[in-house]
Length: 170
Image (spheres, rainbow, N blue to C red):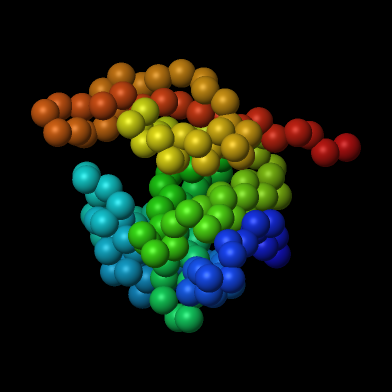
């Protein structure tokens, strides 16, 4: 139900082309170890496996991107009171720069729309230039900053708050 990315790399990158065939499905408790491994590789201050289990128990929209039976990415979102909040999104190193993050993000955005959200909010580190570029290309706009939101070496780092307001369907 998610569109296939429009751009594929040249045939010389055949291993990467296979990753594009990954499927999106609901996260299960049995995925938490793989998800936490991706999280630990992606972030200096990662979520614990317990946080992922809590997200599943809370009923948050929790998805994985799977290729050949292996989890290669995930996204977690809450939807309440007409708003969606993207809580976490990450890919394994081998799944990056092929449109997989965009595909997962667009899938989550569509689920948020279907759930009646007027828009999606998220926080991102200003130092995470790849994520900022992804969100900008997807139509997110800056809303503000949260001072000292993230743990960082030597203290904290602000978060840039972004919003994507969905167009109302008539």
